Image (cartoon, rainbow, N blue to C red):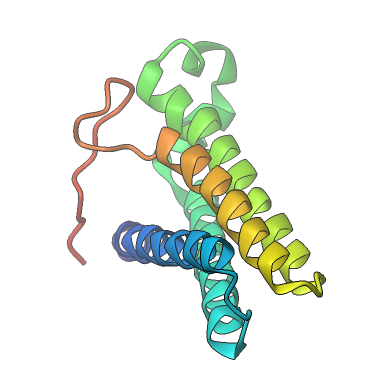
Length: 154
């Protein structure tokens, strides 16, 4: 179960990143061109937030069953001094939660706004902020904090 969830979480990260990039591009484009915020833009906003929430649920499931985070929770005083364990036990989990919270707030603000240009502006800014927070804590292969492969096999 753990290996499957880890692989699914690894795959879903790419869907989150792609959907955020599409939404951000659409947001800036619609904002600058003063486009009407139609059902297509609203659907992309909703799909992006949904993919992010699915990734969050997968991440929470992994946090509960992962041997790394299990060790972190059981041996907190020693684990906070081990970079990789602290990263997954605290930093990654917290920053991803913050990033997805920012995306959720942005999605709700867009949904509750009546004026089209402002809807695009809010989508662009809030989703960009969420993306930057998320990018700061993804365990990229080149990361000095902790390195993981770009894809995990099932």
